[in-house]
Image (tube, rainbow, N blue to C red; front, side, top):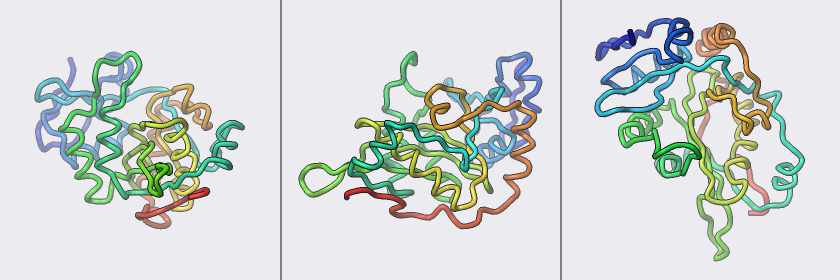
Length: 240
């Protein structure tokens, strides 16, 4: 039986049984507030979709992660970073980034899991300093810029939990990510959770680790304060 998570009680069952018996479905709740979200991420759990007034919480194993000091930039992307004009910012337009992620088409998916309730919940996490957006801006040809791509995620201690990205122009989300990871490393982030083991993240150096190892890393790194705040403003630019 799938556990129902009582409203306001932010404890989660151990994901081990869910991974073994329920394809990673840990529980179902009617709440999606900041307390529930932060408790979930600390345990390696995340909300994946909603059905009516119910929210479904999952874990995935093995878990795909990136250690920032092992970031890999492919030859083609490195050339783009050298030659294309762009500006990468952090936390300047969280609302626009999450809205664009929600609107981005996903191959093999009918619609988006980032429903309005999710946008509201993560925006509140952003307001209290636990969710961050990275924006890639390209020149618009008229002396200004436009939001070409980006991504957002949740940060607890020295862990950044990646959530979703979008690209409205070629290489925009890749450029944002390539510039954001070294910046996160400078802020003290020791682990980036990719959730899904995808070819896209493997190109950046993601590796799959056992879930028990992932949970041990969370217990260690969630408790350590970052070296510096994630902040707000421009973190990288080329030719802008």
